Length: 485
Ligand code: NDP
Image 1 (tube, protein in one colour):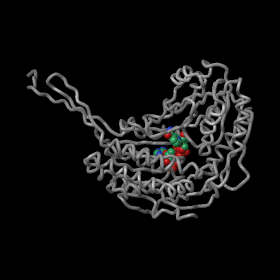
Image 2 (cartoon, rainbow, N blue to C red):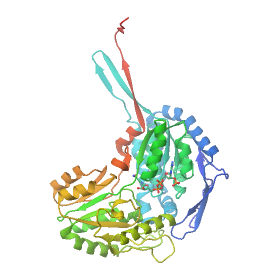
Image 3 (cartoon, rainbow, N blue to C red):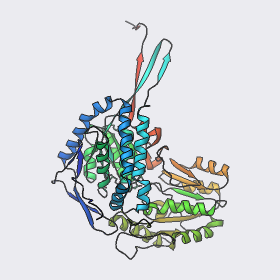
Image 4 (cartoon, rainbow, N blue to C red):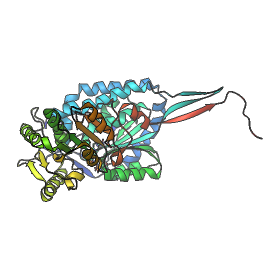
């Protein structure tokens, strides 16, 4: 190992590492070699209780701190995170299998962006006043209390920070449960926040599987749950939260359309489709996996796409030259291979890839299917792997209807040189996060989230503050109270 990947202990509670070996062992696997790089223990009932008790106890003092002070701590954490980007990125690469080329620019750096952005906004959290003649009303923006964050495995550092930064900026505390596949990076986030001056108990990490998540959500001390995960998990978590009418943010899956019109800049459109299908080996929720290409340019598009995929450098994700890494786990690889088999069986035309690569590690070749029809499984289900489905279309009306014919609504993209068409089509697409002549940009300044089954609420931007705070209205009467008796 390049450095010790085994954390000091499994959990981070009340400002320090905590262990409880009674919890089930979770092996952390480096997806490039299949070797175990660390072992942590799932949180037991005692650990869950300890973390929630710490978060509950720390919350009033954290909320009472001047918001600018809270912001300063988050900003300091962002600076530390940037200084340690190289080490943090390597750890994320080992945890997820994503190439260092990606983790260096899209993980800890994205987490630092969130800490910096919400650190800056903390001091500007304000209410409003409404003048009602003599009387007036003011509103206070108050925290929710203890928030639970539950993460997926594709962007462990980013997900932890995208949830913690706005939550903490608003005066909440958090217990975060990473995916069991990628437990390491959130612990580093906790370490860094503590080093930056975060009071004990404000951000806690508890490891575990779905059961631990369930225990956290079901606890009466929790005011809000923010999940990044699949739609089936989203349904369960949303239902559990609904029992106590807890607040939720749901960042769920997608099957997003990417529409390439006949007047598109071909190289940019192919580049967008590559970014929207093969970055992180396709393990990105907002991916544009249904690529609708105008029939008149389809052949040219497929030729250029295949040529450019031939330039992918597939290999050791720790190598700076590598641009395409393994899947996060053997089971995710098997799921993706199952979908590839379905694509073949249902009559889609395999253009390139279509199999596991003959090498150690959980590698699936970048795969493109053409002549995909709307009813095929690979055009309907979220695959979460490097599998692109190319569908033909003839006209705008038709493609908008087909693009919207899905329960998902996370993202959508349009490539065209016709400015009127670009805005007209985007306005009609049922998706929360859209792109014109681009794909998958996610800067912290921009609200991120889904419509329909892809989610509830938004992360990032000012919008996230709405989801981590609540408004109290205070009516102030200046004159006498006129009671009827
Ligand atoms: P899962 O839905 O399998 O799991 C997400 C998290 O929820 C994990 O930490 C998981 O624990 C936990 N969990 C599972 N069941 C429960 C439960 N009943 N109660 C509480 N927590 C539970 O998603 P994946 O980890 O497989 O991630 C891939 C999915 O995430 C894809 O669908 C992808 O689209 C989506 N995603 C969405 C994003 C967005 O912003 N919209 C961004 C990134 C991914 P564990 O797995 O450890 O058992």
